[in-house]
Image 1 (spheres, rainbow, N blue to C red):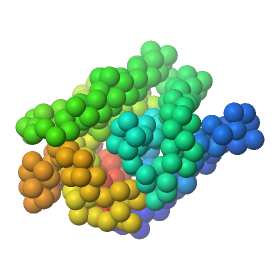
Image 2: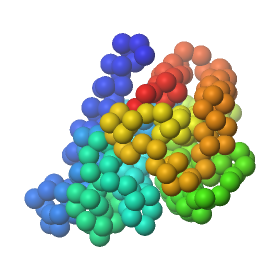
Image 3: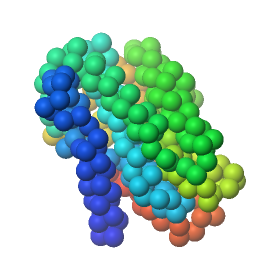
Length: 297
């Protein structure tokens, strides 16, 4: 990664951290334990890949950074809520996330459940109380996209499919269907919400960007599956090898390591092709794509 991209990413990550810190309830406000857990689950960890995608898409569309910060924070809150719930004993039953005890281990299961609920509603509170677009219709469409990405036809539905697939052998199309929803829907929302903070892109350009986001959403999951197989718990910040231990179908279990890596590269190529007409204005999106594909932890 170039120093230019690293500096940009650090600035974006710091900006979203500051915004989230300001918008999450303080720990001296009741209910104190719940607010402590919310801040524990969100602040001080994670690569903030989804906010980076929002900021990169916002740059492409020449959007107001203040608007993009709001949608990036909303998407990150949805992501954080999903991690808290995914780690619960009734889901993936994990004890480590972002290098520290998972929310239900640090607090308790009931608090973790309420933490996820509260982070989800805070995300939509942000979208409802801030002006994100010049048109009210566009803003409503943006809110609708995040609701769709988060619910039964998006992330939650993908997680349900994932839980139902334990111990089963899936075909590659079935696995892609699962991850288009479980992982890809929120990544797609991160890109499209960032871009729609501006009205400068036409329908054709938005469709190109949407195709890019679908490709990179799948690529993200392919790389995740490879890392779960090859990386250590210390470098991942979460329990390595959980998918194999729980007999979950993954791109590695279906394709093997080598072909999974090849698929990630193909998806990266397809994502780059979708950005071809944007020229240099898509520079940041290409850089974030490379970061996603080449990340080691």
